[in-house]
Length: 100
Image (cartoon, rainbow, N blue to C red; front, side, top):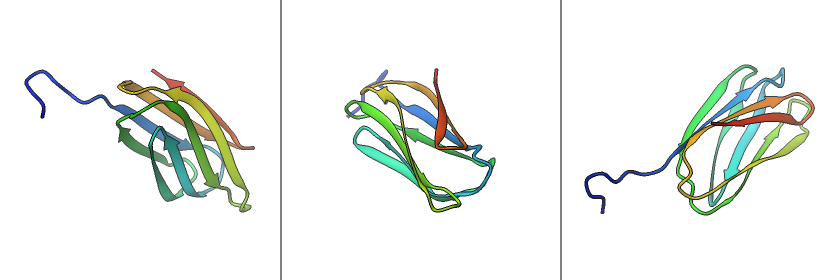
């Protein structure tokens, strides 16, 4: 039950594909949940608003055009954290993570 003045805490996540090619089976894991997309075209951005429960690292997995499985670990999130997390997927299984 929520009384006046209470609100839920959210982190807005964007994942931008700058790998130079379409990726498939994108999965973004965060504490106690995940989201993803079947495919993400080169240059496309995927958005999600999440509520962090627990704490732990963000993990990104996807399948590259050559069927290589990329696995990248990002920053840790903690329960009730708020803000915006930008994830930019780069060639060679690299990614830039920016939280504000």
